[in-house]
Length: 75
Image (tube, rainbow, N blue to C red; front, side, top):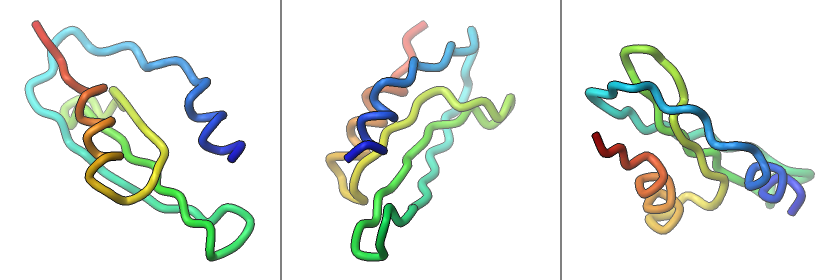
């Protein structure tokens, strides 16, 4: 699927130096037909409203885990 491939080729966003909380959000899109639904999951820094990570996939725990792992921030 070209959408997933394009999403995987995008560079990761630069992380702000200080993140106190992470907000997770999701949205779905149809690709070519209503039978082909894909979800875009994103992690946001609520204070700056900047996206710190995203993944494209299904609406399941495995996709969320991929986002959670990408959004892990160590000081």
